[in-house]
Picture 1 (cartoon, rainbow, N blue to C red):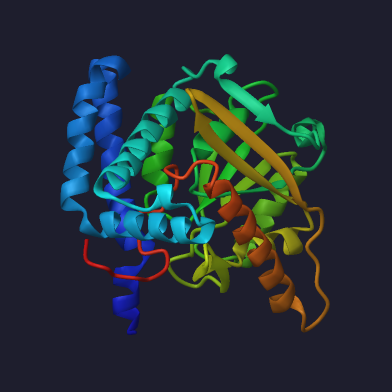
Picture 2: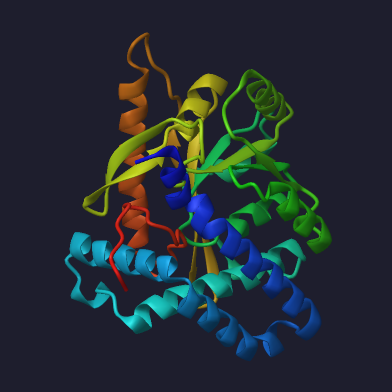
Length: 313
């Protein structure tokens, strides 16, 4: 595949334009109407994106198909209604993001699952790396940056819209959350990230989003099919000599279940072993992500060809 064709099929070309446009439209409507009055309009907005974004429909269908086959559960097999419900879950998550950023999320809606007491490490002199995903609503997890001990949270992203998202964050009142655009792990970025860790700040990065260019990838088995995952989170953990723990937030019955999981206390390798070590961590992460997908099947929000398939739906 040519570089031009590859760029055209990359997630950034498919999802970021649509998701950012949907987020801006949703934010405007919520400010104008309020969340409750927004509900009927939300159905129309989602229906529009559902009807006119064929790639996203194909991707959601393929994900549900793989999940059903992987789990052996016939009830998870895709149909038009289940795909639309996944779109609706994404729109609902956008409203939740706005509530988080605007300080409107009640603490009694958060259920923290932290058996290893990782949250107590907010007091630690050096920060840690949190590896999240596009399953569930990572912004709710980032609410930890706006509550309690007011830890500084730096979210590493590949999106070209980082500055625009930061502006939207500022308008919504998120003061302790900052997006940092990282296209590659150059020395300047590494020095900045190391400094932020030394200041006790936390870093957060998604482990299921391959960089647009310049990033190292690894292929892992995910839901029974090979898929590309970034090496970046595990390279960062090794190079910055910090623990890498997992962060998930799944919504059930109106409550947000935040899961902090110990994962990699140390990521280290000897000369010539780096790729093999990182590959092992990538596969472990893919396995854990697959298990979490079964807990919230419709909360997977990677609406692009994750397995590089192009069925017509």
